[in-house]
Structures are given as C-alpha cells and as structure tokens.
Image 1 (tube, rainbow over the protein chains, first blue to last red):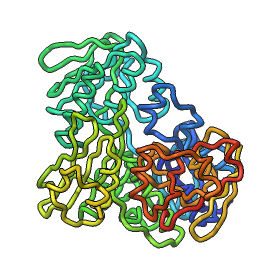
Image 2: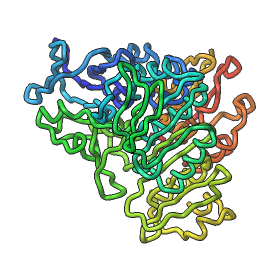
Image 3: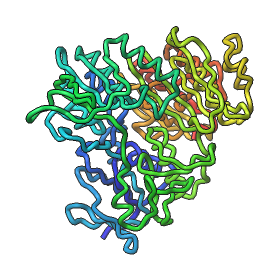
Image 4: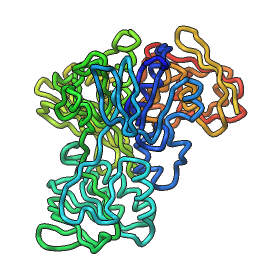
Length: 407
Length: 106
C-alpha cells in the first residue's frame, strides 16, 4: 500500500492548478489527480473561442505538457471519476470500485451545464459547452451555411456566436431577460454587446421565452412562447451552470449552492478542501459569500488549498476578475457589482473602448467592466482593493489618466 | 529551442529548455517555475507573468504593444525593462535569455 498523500478529485483547471501549486509550495508526498475526462487538465476558456475556430491545438489547450506530471511525480488517473467519499476512512471510492486513500482531499469537481428540461431538449443536435468533447461536437456542427440557435445570452453563448460567425455560420441568440448578460453585466455593457453582435450579423432576441425545441430526431427549430418557430440546424444551450456537489453533500460536507469553504478553501471537514466552480466561498472584499465561475477563482483557491496544506501563510484575498473575448472586443471585469449606487461610464461606447465603473454609496469602486481599455481594468482593480472613494466627475474625465486616478 | 534562466526574487535560478513557438511564460509554467502564475493563460489580460528582461537581451525580446504597456504600467515594481512574459515568443535567438521575477508575484 503506497502512502496516502493528497488526492485531488477533478482534473480541470482548478484540480490541475492545485497539483502544480502543491509541488511549487514544497509538498513532497504523493499526489493523485483523478479526472473523468480522457484529457490532462486543459484550459476551458479557449473552447468557445480559439478552439472552436481551429486556432488552438490539443497541445496549446493543455495547462501543462504530459511530461510535467511525470517530472513532478503526480499520479494522474484519467477517464476515472469519484463515486463517493468516505470521510471517516479518509478514502474516496471510484466508479470502477477502486478505493484511494487520502491524507487530505481536494475536491475540484467543477460545475455542469444547467439543463432546462423543456420538450425537445433531448434531440440530436442540442449541445452544451463545458468540455473539449462538447466543443468538438459543436465545431463539427457549425460551418458555412449552417444555422445555430443559441439559447441563453450569457458569455458562453455570445462567445460561441462570435466564433460561429467567424466560421461562416448563421447565428441567432435567444435571451429570456430583457437584455443580454442580464445577470452578469451592467446595462451599458449589455447594450454594447447586443449592438456588436448585431453588427456582425447575429440576430439577437431579448425577452424571448423559449418553450421547446422542434424536430423529429434532430433539432430543426426553436419554439417560442408566442407560437413561432425559428429554424436551426443545431442549438447550443448556455443557461448557466450548477455545481457538481452531490458526492460532497452525500458525504455530509456542508453545501449550499456549492461546497461551503472558508478563505483557505477548507470545507466543514478540516482534511477536505474544495476549489473552483464547485465552491461557495467567502467574497472577503464584499462581506458576502458566493460561487464564482472563473479561471482566476480556480487558481486563487488552488493556491489557498496548497498553502493551507503545506503550511504557507495565507495570501490576501484577491479581487475577483473575469475576461471574455468576442470579435475584436477584449472585455475584462474586476470586482463584483454589489451595493451599487451609481454607474460611471468612462469613454464613449461608440468608440469601442470604454469602461463602466460601479460605485457604492460612499463612492468606492466595487466593480469595473472594461472594454478594450486595459488601463481602466488595472486601475479599477487597484481602486477596488484600496476602498478609497473616487470622484465620479474625474473618473469620467479622460484627461485624467487611470494611473492618476488609481494613485 | 532556447535555454532560459528564470531567477526568482530571492535569487533562486531555474534554467530550462523551451521549445520555439512557446512564450517565455509557457516555458515557466510548463516547468513549474514559481513566480509566473499566468492566470489568464497568455491573453495579456492579467499581468501575473511580469518579468524583468536582462539588459543584454532587451533588443531581442521585441517591444511592448499598447495593450501590454498599459497592463504592465500598473504592475508592482514596474521598471523600464519590465515585460509580460506571455508576450515574448521563444526562438533560438533567445538561447541563454535571463529574466528575473519581481517581489510579491506569488
């Protein structure tokens, strides 16, 4: 029987980063990385962009090359998933019956695409986009002359729409809310993205109630509440994600829209950590908790868990951030729009380069959404960290640099 | 292929071989060199792969575009020879390159 060491359940961005961070921080014991996909940890963000457009290779998608895991002595078990956790015995049971013992367990099980459960959603040609296999199916289904229906006007759907247009496909987006990105972006940003997609030939429908998908065995159209049907050759459903928390909950770990963790990624069991999309985590800067679905969050929590396990001092809470690339638009968001009293737009959206600052009642920056303005992103991130009130008029005034404003 | 030496803020040096076509950042990440996190995976969106390029190599590592210059001007400890390592492509011309990491980049 080999030494127990650390078991990481889930070999996505968070799990892969946790394994690397443990070695970087000096963990000498065994590390077992268990993933249900057949691939080594890879980057998911390019799946809806460069990968879909054929501009990325399996090699460039991989977080690290295969030899990395050999050199770092990380035992990677692919196409393998954890069925249950036995916390009393410090062991996980895999779906093939194998029992793997752990000293410390890191759960990095991620999230899965939300399913709507509407009629027709089981038809062929109805796709989602979370994994490389999903992306390959989507890639095979789009091309010149094909028509893709995108249900859900969130980031994944919009990025896929942009890629579909780049590949010569027709695309239309159906969003239930009255604006795109309704849950995750400010109205000025929603307006900007709707205009950008329309300018690139994407039909954008907001306030659109999808009630089902039409087709015999393969999807042929999207049915709306008003009885109309819009024809399509393929449908991508991007309506959010739900955390894969079932086995954690079954083992008695505290869960509440994700596995509940502290600021060091520790669950309600001191020997079990959880990282990435799976977790409900403290948002220290905002005095709240929440679930973040982002790469920076996965990496921050991977470092938190590795620090806690190796006895490294905990690092200060980071400002959450996100990015998205669509067409020639580089969106970077820092912070989260909690307790917002005022929006300040810096720059002219019509110019294609602007930023939206979210200020609280005290005038402190809570969040910045920057479009092709990396200085606003970086300066805004510093302002969020500093919690120093800013003058809205100065923020709007482009004769002040972000460097000055953030100083 | 280029041999690149990454020097941590505490002086620890890591010399690794990096294939042509990768970035200086990818060379560090693929070999688990600490201090280069590259949170955004090389999209020039995060400034967590900040390095100082030794003077002798500056003319061979190219020039910062506007986006990189803007991002890096907000990084901690920025100097004239600061670069984002995800924006430096590796080729045989960089064989022997030495880059140093700033303090506080994990």
